[in-house]
Image (cartoon, rainbow, N blue to C red; front, side):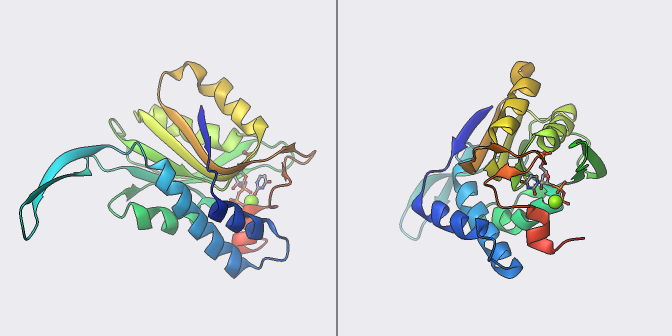
Length: 212
Ligand SMILES: O=P(O)(O)OC[C@H]1O[C@H](OP(=O)(O)OP(=O)(O)O)[C@H](O)[C@@H]1O
Ligand SMILES: O=c1cc[nH]c(=O)[nH]1
Ligand SMILES: [Mg+2]
């Protein structure tokens, strides 16, 4: 998996406050929203476009428009929802599919409880949103759903990633032959014994929406 760690002082600044245990939920939500917009700018560098010409008040101008089919954005519930508005602000014409997944905290295996995706994703560029890439079980299952439906180009946007999660994705998709990218604000050190990213930011879903 091609991995890009976005190296930008504003990203680093916002991420530092996001990690801080003293940051409350409203601030955490705002920072996650701002961070994903900055990451999305990099993540959409290869978005497909077609040539287009418009008339300015002075003369024709050659430019581009987003190609069709429009990209599909897929937030992974629950925590990925906190990244959706920041992404669609940059790609307002994108369609949105949903995956609901939860990690069993004793086995660390991901379970899928909701799927709302187009049946046929042939020719679609997909952007998966999930703040945390920890063991990689959740993201690997999500990407497999998209490839199974014909997606041929997937970019994951994660606020934080662990080396273990990247290794899991590489092992799962090395031979797939399909473009798969990760754009993240930071590559952290490792997972702890409970499967949490170290130093991480804790449970992203809980920090966004509270402990349920
Ligand atoms: O890489 P993994 O080891 O699979 O862990 C990462 C997943 O864990 C978190 O979700 P969680 O299961 O806490 O669900 P939530 O979003 O509803 O809180 C996170 O948002 C990822 O989806
Ligand atoms: O550190 C982690 C790992 C998995 N899920 C989270 O929300 N945080
Ligand atoms: Mg959670």
